[in-house]
Length: 573
Figure 1 (cartoon, rainbow, N blue to C red):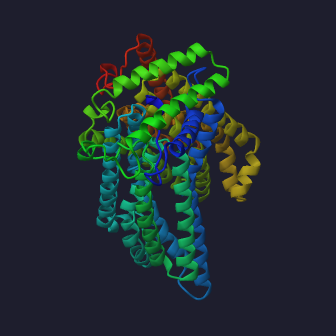
Figure 2 (spheres, one colour):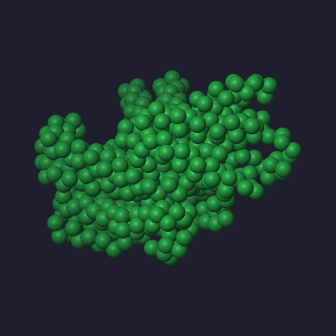
Figure 3 (cartoon, helix red, strand yellow):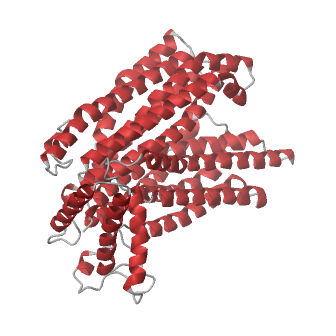
């Protein structure tokens, strides 16, 4: 049955013959085989992992890049208006900055719509649990829309306190009000787009998710130019154009998810399953069976041509056949991992990630608050360091996404040997990239600092901070990789507990003490470095001393232990 690599295709016409359907199924099967674990070592190859991580890094970085371009276009438009005798450009930028910082903070807190959905969907797909996959996707979109609506309502309700927090002048507040009302209306649609990206990655359609985000970013930039430079509609026009783009993007994203489902039964209702073979307009049972058989045959053929021992290939085919017979006996939707899945379970997972994301964002915000009290030059140096930190984080976050996407699917398949080997390779690659950035920072110190500032006082503070900032890159890369590993297990309570202990027990008290005792930017970042070391060390202990031994035991015993075993439950670790 080819349980691990069951793919199917959409027929443009139900009258097309079997040869045409088989040809398209073989093409999809070969693509799947290229991304599948090699029979020779059980893991995904280094080159393939590097390629996926690079694509994931682009997927993560494209949205912040679009936001940067939006700021550039807005700044140019406001400056042009000022030259014509219009209002001060700084007022418009201050209003934009206050609103966008609040919107971004809220959206980042609800980033669970990406991570939780990616992991849960990938695990269900790996187990061929198509009914649960459909439930998870529907829950993902509902949660994203509800979270976005909640964010918008809260920001509107707290509009005045937000302005007071930033100490905005009355003229700046007036401009912020013209922008915030329509900008927050886009938040539900923005989170739906993010949720769709997480689902597509759970479907292992990473390139499609990256393409979607890339096109969205291009359209956003084009709409910004239209609203600000051509129509000259200011902040109000910018907010309206952003809302229109995200409404359209949400509709396209949902449509792509439904048309990219890895099996026809993902979005098939219970009543349609009972129909006498009617099937869906895009899929048929014969298509599913043909594609599944061809996927197995194509992978076996490629393994044999690559020199894999014939007995190894035969044994794997026999095991896949046994798994398929077992998994499809009685239930056409495959094994139901969803026995423990419910909206309440999803909300519990989401709440854990919300706490984690809030504490992480809060820690960065608190660093900026104390840095602002050190003087203008140190605050400028801090802002440069934060920008570099954020840029590198988006790059290494690609390893976390790939670890979550592949790891969750392997866990769904109970392929523990492939799981460990793939994780080890991703961790090693992430560490190597982190070390590379450390070397680049140290070697190119003067050149990199010169790109951002020529102020002697700011340069002096950056040179004092630079060795610490460089060494932190290696640890930061490990933090991201191991976060992806833990996300794949859906143990979000663990990353929540790590952040609670690290942030509340260590970071906040230590940051206050470092500010009062040393009053330097280096001391503030040293506290951040210890927090990251705690996160990395905790994740290493959880992964290698708790998860890995259990996965080896499960594989050796030949028992299909799942993450619902006593060891892996909320109270088990």
